[in-house]
Image 1 (cartoon, rainbow, N blue to C red):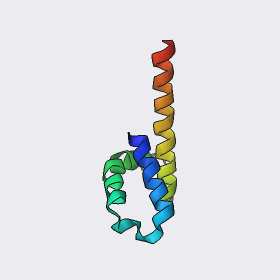
Image 2: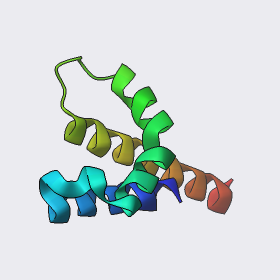
Image 3: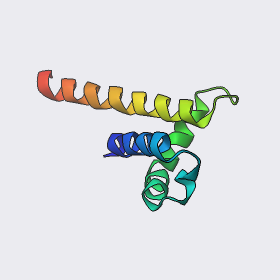
Image 4: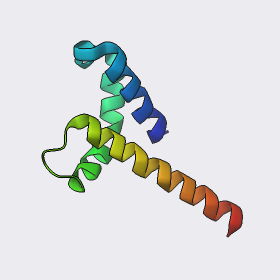
Length: 75
């Protein structure tokens, strides 16, 4: 679910542009993904922008999901 929220937030980032802050769906996705994005930002330099933090967080969530699926299937 978190991965889908990150994807949805990224799509709205591309579609809405600067007006995304007023979009209610974007605000909901932002609320849901705030904590994981903050954790992901810890591992990146402070100069990293928000889009990079979102991509990094999505990559980590995707790798965790794939790893857990692999463990469930083969272990």
